[in-house]
Image (cartoon, rainbow, N blue to C red; front, top):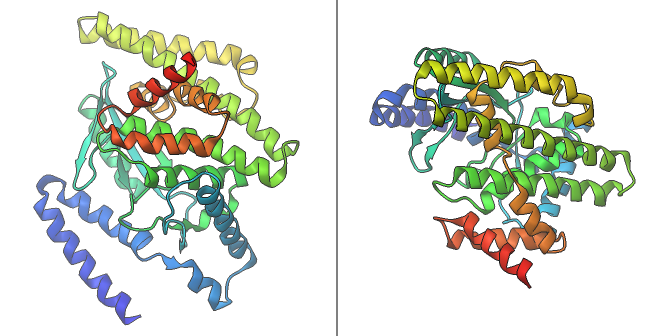
Length: 358
């Protein structure tokens, strides 16, 4: 206990100095740094919690499921072994933090924030949701479309092991596996300055890895695996819809000269797209998961996020088919893309094109 008490005093002091050093962003780094320390740095070792004999059945079962998925990720998929998901944090809410992203309201141009160590990222996280809402309001007043969304995990990229959070006990096997494999893919391959690529490969490996895990655990004819087939089809449909909408908006913004023209075109394109989705939803989708997309506010930041965090994954599916749906082989090839940090996607595309010519 004394050790934790000393650290609890030292870490905020370090964060204050860190914040002053980074000037205008100092307050942000201090606030989020304290939240990070509380939820990540001070997470408890799962092995110690298990040894205490004081765990309830639900938490014990969560730890068993996490351990099973980690073994699958390392042994079956070939992801890099790490200490991620070996510690635990109890939270009172059902998500970790609020994340905001910003895009100019009259052009499809996302804007990044600069961070020490990891460089530029297209999002900013807040452990205090009220603070996220306040910042979002200020950004909208500056002429940005802003998306505020909840996330249930993020990768520390090896600086600290990513914890298991208490709200994950309610996750299905598919959702839990997808989350863990997604984040472990970030720990396996992360290329600075290639944010879209990093998300694409983690999304693809997370989706297909979770499906393979559920198929092996529950069987190909199980209701759990059949639900994944429907979910996978709907995700592809949603990503295609977002990609097409992103392209329409981008083309309109490039062709129109004045801000007024761009905003009017944006309003018409978004309204038309949502109305089309409302009319055709049942014929486009198998589940109700994306029905809200036809009703919730739609703007550049939401379209950009839908495009960026899924986008067109066809290149990776082409690779998957070329390698006989051997996901471990796909992961191994993606790991080789680290040798081409300036053009990782071009490396994979070249491999696919050469294979198709054989």
